Image (cartoon, rainbow, N blue to C red):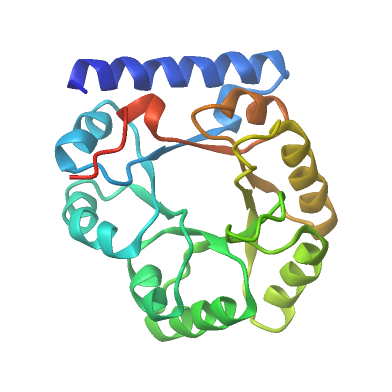
Length: 225
């Protein structure tokens, strides 16, 4: 994908977010675009940064360590979000690098994050990932356990939870999953909703998403080289 294609895709996504927000009587700036740069190198990311994008999402800690420290040094106002599952042995690295961790989904990880935040003196913002489709192969806490887990994060682990995140099953209508996440957020007393990806972010915006995670619509197909 050429730089021109990327920037065209980036502009198109921003316009579509603004249009979806307007149709829901929401201001465009109520929705944060998270540009999902996983599997893409600096040569793909840099033009999007230079176009003004400042919030990026990655799936893997180790991959992120290879490309983001230098970019964050050059562009100190970048916000980096961890979107993929977090393994306990990567928690220290994740707390050190990421500004937001969206995949908190079990007590063990909550404990490790709390320990590392205290140890490092860093406080990344946190989201609980909810497995709205109850898919056995997918990360995330079950919907019936989500509200109680958010409360445990606060009372037992001393963590402030900013919002909830979900990844609906690929073959299902995402609308009911977004509605469920919004309902759970209200019950848990959190304000932020990370939901919607390249194929369904406009629906998510109309249903109250405060951030959408868009990769292929900006960067094209993933680069696995």
